[in-house]
Length: 289
Ligand code: PMM
Image 1 (cartoon, protein in one colour):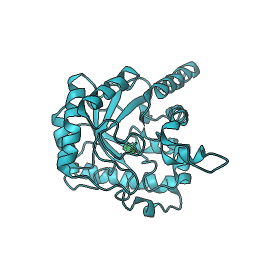
Image 2 (image 1 turned 90 degrees about the horizontal axis):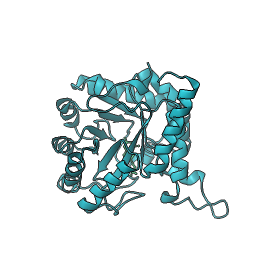
Image 3 (image 1 turned 45 degrees about the vertical axis):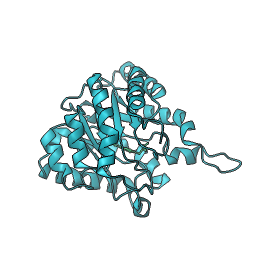
Image 4 (image 1 turned 30 degrees about the vertical axis):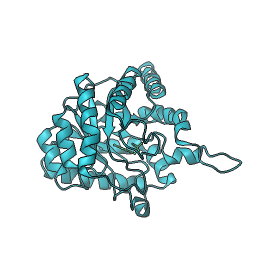
């Protein structure tokens, strides 16, 4: 089964790899922290991402960068709800990036159409029943632990096999909890309990995920493995996060070529072009999608 083709409830089929633009309503996200804390600015930024070609806008109110400290539920709700509501009222397909069931539930009530839980339902025992109750697409990302400790959990023999197996196990748990398999989106969780070489190995073998039969979301945007790749050869200094967008767009095209359902990015323009290039090539090749 081609993962790209799986129809998800309430989400358009774009006929190519989709583009999920990111709006982090946080003071501390690694690449755009503090820029969109004001709800009006955050909504305007989300609309700008759509104008640049985003198919979905992912709204998050809690940073998941390695070592990040958790925010309270009240603070997270205060950050995201006006932004979700504003974008949904403007007709945007919104996804809510949260590990909290209460936030997911309130966001769906406010108009969000996808729940993007980086813990895939592991962080909050109420998340799976809430995801089941909403019926909206639910992201099961590969996750081994909270940001404060996740780097210590990056230990693998065969990273591709183990990550897919752990996601498959979590898919089973989520389905046992009442989620319809047709709701599930899978995600390798680049940078989450992964070393740089693990991120590359996972990206190199996205084709191996097709056996799960579910759409694959890939979120490489501005991540550290790209900063390391592009480090200054003289000083060894990592390429700054906001100067990693060309590399991100390259990853977007390559992920699309391996059948990714969507790519999650901060800077949309280049990736929107990249997935269209990939789609044109695929069509020219006569490939079935
Ligand atoms: N990464 C981040 C946040 N949310 N969601 C999914 N599904 N997959 C990811 O890899 C992912 C995510 C961290 O990046 P950010 O701080 O730039 O949002």
